[in-house]
Amino acid sequence: YGTIGIIGAMEEEIELLLQHLTEAQTERHAGMTYHKGLFQGRKVVITQSGVGKVNAAVCTQVLVDRFGVDAIIFTGVAGAVDPKLNIGDIVVSTSSLQHDVDVTALGFPRGTIPYQEVSEYPSDEHLRNLAKEAADKVYPGRCLTGKVLSGDQFIADRGVVKSLYEDLGGACTEMEGAAVAQACYMNGIPHVIIRSMSDRADGSAHENFEEFTVEASNRSFAIVKEMVQAL
Ligand code: ADE
Picture 1 (cartoon, rainbow, N blue to C red):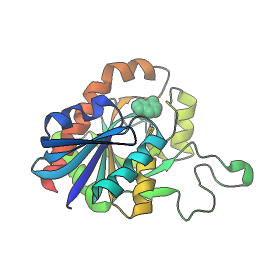
Picture 2 (cartoon, helix red, strand yellow; picture 1 turned 180 degrees about the vertical axis):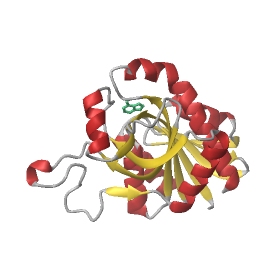
Picture 3 (cartoon, rainbow, N blue to C red; picture 1 turned 30 degrees about the vertical axis):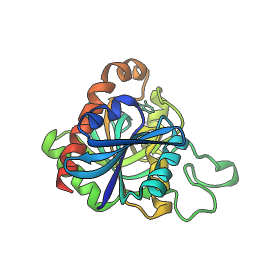
């Protein structure tokens, strides 16, 4: 890989990355700040996309067009969907899907974007394996690989979690990953999503999210750091 793009949605999710960036230079595009420099001796561009799928997609396209990134890593927090996951645990994406795409009224399955060859975007196998190895090293026994479900919704309801798990087979839910994955797919760029659980997307999600977002963000960072070293 030449240059790696690293995206987080919120400040907490990129804070430690920026602290470890050397020879940093910044540029602004589309309302976002892009931090170019060296991280673990590798050329990277680190950026905070903001929350939600549109921000994530625009951010990804800027990384591709203006910075020529060769791969993208998404780092951050998510709500746990798989009941095996505890707060703090990690999900490395095998694929991702937009759970809020709903054209079921026209007969398309939930999550399917009409007239498109794919709606579920696999992560890059090599990046995924490196992320999983890094997670197993840094937090042994705390990492699952699985499907990341993204939507422009903060999920805080047990019933919704049940359907995300049973109907869509999700491991966790967040608000950007599948948009990054789709934009990467459209550009032929490999990607992987790494998420640490800040909450269980249930009735306690807002309290847990406030309490655990910093710790979960820092865990995701620790894995990215370990992983980039191995690239
Ligand atoms: N990110 C962290 N927790 C989340 C939740 N419960 N829903 C959506 N995005 C999240």
